[in-house]
Structure formats: structure tokens, C-alpha cells
Image (cartoon, rainbow, N blue to C red):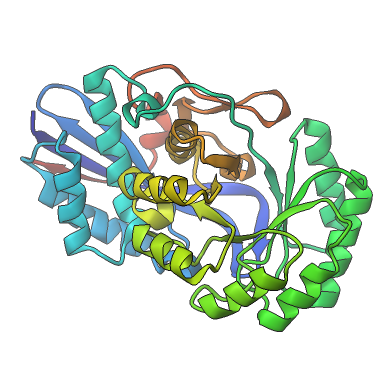
Length: 368
């Protein structure tokens, strides 16, 4: 089996409303889809969702690199995933989000050939997993109202974006707690918005509130500050932007800088590297979350397979597609009651893309 065709799609997915975090605002999710075809008629799909403030990639840079990766893959064996992913990373080490789309597509092909869902291909079994849903940065009353709607929809946990001034952030958190009730679980995410002293001051005030953990309170590069916050915080600290790959996971462990890992395919470069992070976490006893950018249900399906495969993944934040006005995905991940993630029991990812939607997109097709 060899790769004989690669198609790259430019996909602008409109959002229901602008989604703001401490690092920026998204009103259109500028994504990239890839399709890898083989000479045996089996194809795989993947998705890149570049967000420049985190991964340093844009849609335009992703499209350029995707075309180069596509040319490289033509004529090669898609089932030798370790070789393919290593080769791609050697050529494009600073493009994890773009690489992740090709990694997903390769695992999709391998699962179809093996006639196994990707979670089983990774050595996992079907298990129940639940996702939270996120409230973006806004005025306190608006965030509280949105949180109440998400609770009414049945999500078991609400994630709250913070990371501006301590005064504004505290008003936001208090408003959300009032709207949800004193015992409803909340996760908070500052997206690097605080410094060390600010983070400690804010988190020390959360004693008695139903806060499960805090994500990335300080800049990603400052592991000393992350460790200092962890040592003073009454709630567990999760590394997000500080964790891209397995090397980062080892560094975080060495520095004792966090309690939890947040694994995202857009940061790790795909399932292969994400699996390595999960195994390191399992060995060290570090609970994980599988998170997302603003992918469609295609990318989220790949992430859900990873989360399902590894019991060390105890938290999920796979709500990106809930922000979209359109859904171009056929089958794939679905949201059940109370935040349950439902995966199709089909070979590979179990997700496809609507051909009518794809027909409207800018496309680059590469053939052997």
C-alpha cells in the first residue's frame, strides 16, 4: 500500500459568537483539512486548527506546510506511521498543528486496514468519558448567564476562562459560582495571563469554592513560576501551553511544576506523540486532560479516541465544535446526556466530511 493522493482544504468555520481568552479572540475558526488516499482505495482524514498565540502557526502557514508534507508523502507507505511522523517532524519541527492533521489521517487509514477503532488500535477499550464546556472571557454577568445555560444543557463541569486583572477575574468567578450554585464543579484557565504573585493571590482566595484545578496560570516558559504557584496553590495546577511534547512532559516532571497535564493534538503533533505523553503521565501518576482548540468534530473525534484509550486521562475539554455555526462532519464524536462523549464503533476515526461542504472550499490536490 502506498499513498497516491493528498488533498488539502482551506476551511473557515464561522463561530456562533466571538470566543475570547487571555491570548486573543476567535470569531472564525481558520482550519485545514487533509485527506490521504492510498492505491488500495482506503483514505484517511485529519484536521489542523492553528492558533498562532499558542502554536505559532496560522491557516496560511499551515496550508503551505501541508502542501509540502503532502508532496513528501506521495509514494510512501502510510502504515509505517512511526517512520512517516518522524520524517515529517524532522523537516517541520515547529509546525505541530499541521503535522497533527497528517498524523490523524495516517491513524485513520491504519484503523481501517486493521478494522479497529483508533482507541482500540492504541490499546484501549470503550469506556465512559465526560467533557466539560467552556465559558469564554466576557463581562461577569454575561459569563454567568452562559454558564447557567451550559449547566441547564447537562454539562457536568464548566470551564471558566480568566487571565486579565485579578479584580476583573474575581468578579467573573464569583458571578459564575453564584449562577451555578456553591457546589457545582468549575475549572479555571488563565491561559498564561497572570504572573507568579498574581496567580498565588488569586488561587489562595479560591479556598471553599468548587474549583477542581487551574490551567496554565503563568507564562508557558516560566516553569520556576509554575512550580512556585503549585507549591502555594490550594487547587491543583495543570500545565497546558507549557506542554507540547514528551520532552516537555519529562521537563515538567523534573521541575515538579504541575499536578496535571493537558494534552492537545494541536500541540503534540498528533496521536503518536500524545500517546507518548500519556504513557509518561501514567508512569509518573500524573492525571491528564485531553483538550482542544476550536476543531470541528473531526479533530475532536481523534482527541476522544486518545482520551478513551488511556484511563490516566481523567478530564476532557472537547467542546470546540459547540462554538461553530456549521457542522461539516458526518458520523464521528457525538455529545450525549450529561456531557458524555459517544464514539462510533467503526474502523479508524469513524468520522467523515460532508462532500457538499468540501466542494465549496479552496483546495490543493497532489497526485503521485
